[in-house]
Length: 232
Length: 160
Image 1: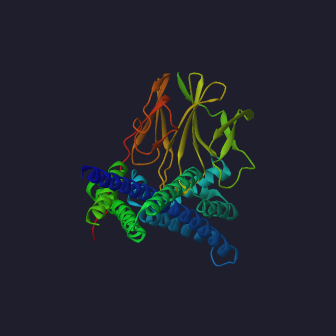
Image 2: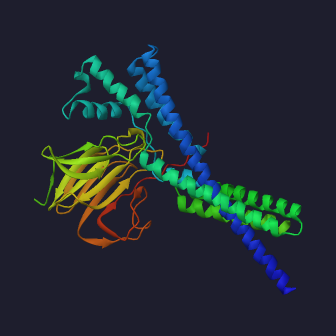
Image 3: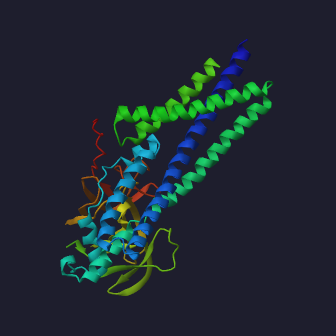
């Protein structure tokens, strides 16, 4: 009897571990997918604005204004599309998009030297500044994107590992149909519990608390996986 | 004077790098190439401290800017580095002030005054725990400078 109980406890722990691996992998895959979408969107937005200027539909000034406004909105949307953990990391520091005047000042100095004054520039030179702002709006941080690329590979690796553990458990089970249903239920619960746990921790700890939210995601995933396994 | 602005230093972005690569620039002194490279595309400021140089660089990505802090020895070899910034966020480098004998302060991100204290001998650091939020460093246990700051978190959204 005690051996059976031990075996069930062991299997339950392995199931929860596998659900947590899937939970972590899914978090990484979601956040890196959001990042890829972000990189694509800002490039497309910048290209589109330049295209509209070349077609005469917008002036460079109008394009720069739109680029600045749209870019800040895209960043806000991407934060909200991230997992609770990803969002908490992004909100660790108070967000403050750059104003158009800040961008004009920065690009004027970069393009025309430390003593340049935007007002004193010729219209053509001012357009160069506006065009640089539009071009900049199409850039994402190469450091972040490179790191997210690595995390994406790690996340996919964890998901594959989780699937491999599930496949092994199903292959070793006497009732393969029941084992498949149980694996799907527990893994799904682990992922959903992780997202829900992270979101709840975010509400409890406030924005920009990645440690708290990560713990919440881990605990939520484990509780959900153990809970489904218990009632199975 | 232990510290001064080092206006003689400039950097020039290396050509031929892939578009999505982290930018790398060559360091120039009085317009003469040093043959040494530093991560970053634009030089926000350079400070000489003793025989070392503290460089502040950015990647020329104004909508998601990270500030690179690089400490170089007298031969422009990298001694230590850190990044300040956050994903989907940006900052503007300004208000650089020198504080004798060994510190600088500036504004960048997070509604805080950041302070970099330069160490005469490398100090111990604990990865992930020794830095304020928003400061990123390579894994390691030594540091030649300490970054201090009290960045504000994103305020909780108000319910409408």
